[in-house]
Length: 163
Image (cartoon, rainbow, N blue to C red; front, side, top):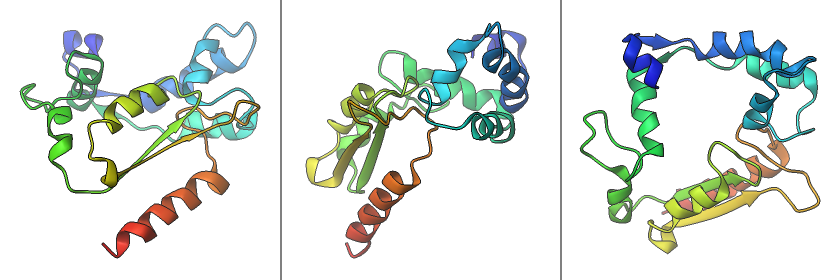
């Protein structure tokens, strides 16, 4: 976010940057190997699928959006673009059911961070689920667990659809 603000660029080509970085993360000497666990838990995605995810699924992001998302890491958490509205302060006022999903090896939004947000929502409205087991499989931010995650989402939606 800081370089985007300093350079005053309108968009950040995240997809292009990740596609360009992928060979340095996936091939010797693995100069950018720290990038891979940010996206997927080790051995979760086949290399071909991982490459497709990284090279084809990220787009250009408006710099203003990236700057707003960066507030998540600041005191008080995510804010609106003006910097004056703290979303966290209003979660307890919501009456909308929330399904909060975390991956046990998610480095972008770890389970503890998800739980800290979940605590601010009235208990009957929130369902919190961490995917991943001590013996594996493990899940990071972009891991695809169709057989586990989708049924959880469908059950949540069906339960709250009648409400």
